[in-house]
Length: 276
Image 1 (tube, rainbow, N blue to C red):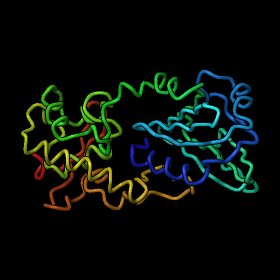
Image 2: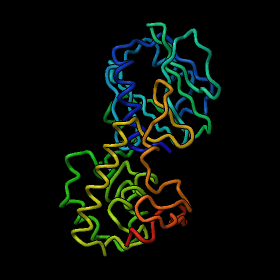
Image 3: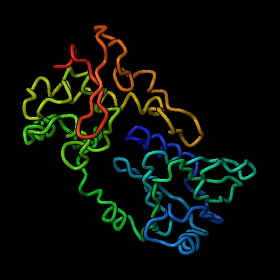
């Protein structure tokens, strides 16, 4: 599933390419991609609209129109936006097409078909319906301070790895890949109770979370299976992964085999020697 760096890369790509572009027509090729709105109403309301801003909160994308309408999008496991010439062949698994006035098309492609798209009458409605007010601070936001993070960890006895994935408790936007990587860089085992983490360990984890998110954004995110940016390019952070996806391979630090367990039903990678 695309995590914060991937969604931010998509947001940035859309912002550069479609802001101030007018929609001439919308085609919905798979109506189930839409949530709580019919294909006919979706197409009718968006025809003639102009994109003015592309926003993101955690893993949610919001495409704002000049009229105030907002398209809310969750990419889920394999959703992606491609900006392509109208003359170019439409890729398989394309579910929604926005035909733009500049002879380009914004195409929403989703191999696994879990992605969802909705239309809101305003930014306020979008925020309320998408429950973004319930989300914890993001790693790259001003609200994600060390004091906040340290105190938040002490509230929970649950294992640290699943807690980092709970979008409403300690931090939002962090997913399986970056949780594993952050815990490795900070030397903390994923099964450790959150409230057992010392101040020094919390500081290491805090810095590691920010580092992996910022570093991944710089290289366009991580492409493991389906993720591509708006130009169809793969993210390059996979080249920097220390533990994720490296089951039984040698640890890059100590040569011990990377462990793999299921923790709260999520695959979890760690080094038994480097992480305590």
